[in-house]
Amino acid sequence: MENTIANNTVAVNEDGYLTDFSQWTKGIAESIAQQEGINLTDRHWKVIDYLQEKHNKEEALSIRGIKKSGVIGIKEFYELFPGGPLKKATKIAGIPKPKSCI
Amino acid sequence: MKNLLILGAGTSGTMMANHMVSKLPKEVWKITIVDQFKTHYYQPGFLFLPFDIYGTKQVKKKGKKFIPKGVKYIQERIDLIDAESNTVHLEKGEILPYDILIIATGTKIAPEEVQGMKGPKWHDNIFDFYTFEGAKALRNKLRKWDGGKLVIHISEMPIKCPVAPLEFAFLADAYFKNKGIREKVDITFVTPLDGAFTKPKATKALHYLLEEKGISEVSNFNIEQVDYKHNKIIDYGGAVVAYDLLVTIPPNLGDSVIERSGLGDDSNFIPTNKATLQTLAQDNIFAIGDATNIPASKAGSVAHFEAEILTGNITRFINGQPLKEEFDGHANCFIETGNGKALLIDFNYTQEPVEGTFPFPGIGPLRLLKESRMNHMGKMAFKWIYWNMLIKGIHIPFVSATMSKKGKHLEKV
Image 1 (cartoon, one colour):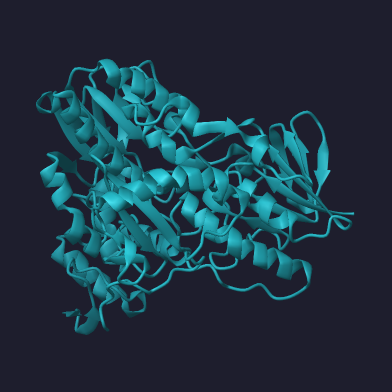
Image 2 (spheres, rainbow over the protein chains, first blue to last red):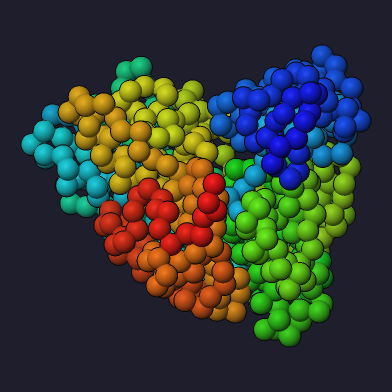
């Protein structure tokens, strides 16, 4: 389905995640973040860059992996994206939330 | 003489030994396979061991039995892969040169990665069922356990056999019902993902199983530690789940030899081309099965399909031909739902599991994404297929290496 985010028409699924990463822009990220009640700072963008890099390499995301990469401490990660940080951060970053085979 | 060296004699390594021995002229190529352990386990059987559905003898055999004549078998720990010099160093000092290397070193659980998991209560009231020892210890526990809070938990993704924790929950429900103590057991499924089911079609088709079997879900739980003194798991956000019996899937990592050799990512998986199965490290190093970092499921069926395609690509590599970008992430997995029924799912990188029939459109006889007794018979028959066909590199009739769209209920775009 389609949605208008930050004056752009983008393809999203029922949960509001972008289904076409090439449509993502920083403006879209800020718009989604606003909806989640988050103001994006440099610390947020650092995490978003990391998540997008993992997405482009098709590598799985995990809290342990984030911790090991040193991109950000986990306490801070939870503070930046309160309430299900992986869920929220991936949505803002325009990538799918972590999934399994079913 | 040229050398083809295979590291790991589990499912993938054994299949590749069988495939390649019939493809490479023995006057030109010497094939060697190395594994640190003499036992070959049927890992899908670990799910059944805790519930006394299988006995210990049914899940293990001597690995050497399945290595074909013409392949040299060495049982020894691998110390280092020296990609620069095309050699592999074994623990006792022998150095094996190779022209082509196939890494099939698999994935192991690493409970020590989570604070408090592998502590004094490990295999006391905290169990895994992803190892022979863990599954057996859990069997002994369940035989005398008279009820309480059973928590089935996934630490992080990826894990081998992503459906196994759900299967465990379904089989546990049946086990306690059959024992007449189901009302004394509280079953909770705890996952770091957004739910027990994460794909839309599967969620719609299968969520009823959780309600029907009285299994509660705790989602988005990222475990920080096991407070074994107070029988609680605690997540980074402060969420707490109490347990009397914790059955956990610890973090899954690639073999430590990959880390020692500087070839892996931060989980010791090997960066590999997801369509050709050539590693990104060196042209003459290929990888297969659970050891890779590709986004396919870590499952035996995936390794079986990969083996057929990798065999073709190694042959092309030897002949100086370009590799085919053939592998599509195909997986075909049974999911036990308890009391003689199971589901079947068939999917790949781009196609989520959908309903339909398999392998023949309309006829089946297996049903996709629907419970059936035929599916359960298929799962049980699979043990015979594994030992007698799959690991011997024999093609399974009517099941192609890449996923077929036939028989699937696909939406018209």
